[in-house]
Amino acid sequence: MTMPTENGNSTTIEVPFIQAQNEEDDTTQLLSKFLNRLETFLRLFGFCQSSFFSFVLSWLSFLLLGILLPVFMIMFSASANFNKYQINSFEFQILAFQSLAAAISLLCISHNLRKYGVRNFLFVDRCHGHLKEFHQEYADKIHDFFLLLAVWVIPCLLLKIVREVIRFIYVPHDPWWVSLAILIALIISWTYSTIIYLSGCALFNLLCNLQVIHFESYGKLLEQDADVLLYIEEHVRLTHYLSKISHRFRIFFIFELLVVTASEVVALFQTTGNKGIINLINGGDFLIASVAELVGLVICLHAAAKTTHRAQAVASTASKWHALVTCSSSKAAASSSIRDFKGPNMASSMRINYSQCDLESVDYVPVPTNSQLTSSTQAYDMRQAFVAYLQSNPGGFSIFGWMIDRTLINTIFFLEISFVMFVLGKTLTFTPK
Image 1 (cartoon, rainbow, N blue to C red):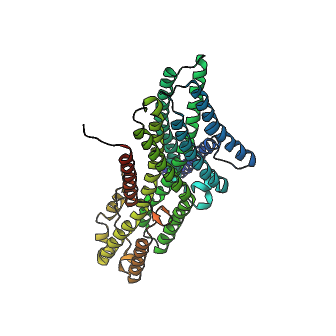
Image 2: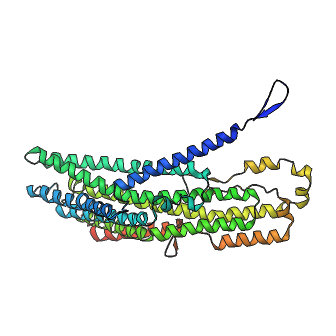
Image 3: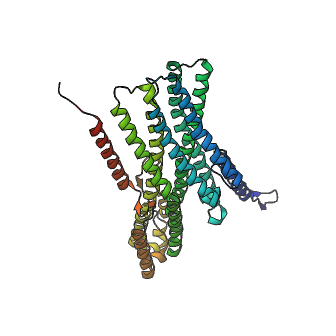
């Protein structure tokens, strides 16, 4: 910034540079704050098992809170023989699938965190070379992680509390504090297991959203008119990260899908096959457990499909960029009068905008202004090879070669519908009067 003095001279003050440095330091501190908060949360629920003591404490807590405590409470509350309001087979089936889903989440996430650490696991450490310009977006995504958990855990918890309060009213114990102790113990156990399960799903969603940031900013790299080799190296780095994520979460994804599918099939069998004895009190946990499990599965599917389509959109963006460069007139690029005709305004106004509520995206590619890229035949061949490379290597989240996109999600949906129709065909019968 230049300021005039009394004798007519001017002095330059480097305030913008200092301000920029302060802003970078602020974003770095903000990211560190959110990462520490995330690590504290993961450590609190036993995901960070860096030592033998933390490993034993984590799984001992899961065994006590997630399995033994609800088993003891179910068996103790069943001693009063209130079969109308509690069926042990229902309770143990729900508990088995709930504990299994939480155990898979705890096992897979803790293994990856123990092996890589939180920062390396999320690809936000310094060794991955991510610029400071993304720190604010990283912090926002970590904040969204906690928001996503709260949005789904709190409503499910309220449903669970309502259900347990109703059972507390209809299934009294003498003295009354016994029923209250059972109610509190079951709610604590359910909340712990549900947070463990949904935290794994939300952490996968966070990891995918962090990669989406770089794919969305990849189109801006084309504005620099840099060497094509730079574009290829950046894309190779991004797809390499996606391959790592796919490898780390493939077991988690497959087992959670199988557990949720089996849980829903059993829930349908029990609720439709026992129409005479099922009611809101003894079968309400089927609804609550199904909602929580389906929410986690949908979070994972949405995150994987979103990442895949962002990665595949890069090829479309590069194709448009290549077409604009090729079709630009070399004479117009060489002419200073034509070059000044709203070229920078057009380039600055065209950006790559992605919809946050849908997987659809509209790509806007800036009109290049580098005349050498337009006139050089060698540059054309390099761009053509670059586009061919992107079309042959689209990238995305995959499981043993199966790309998770909208096509595979539709396939999974119709397979689940087939299971539902099969179960309903076995349990529901209509007889003419």
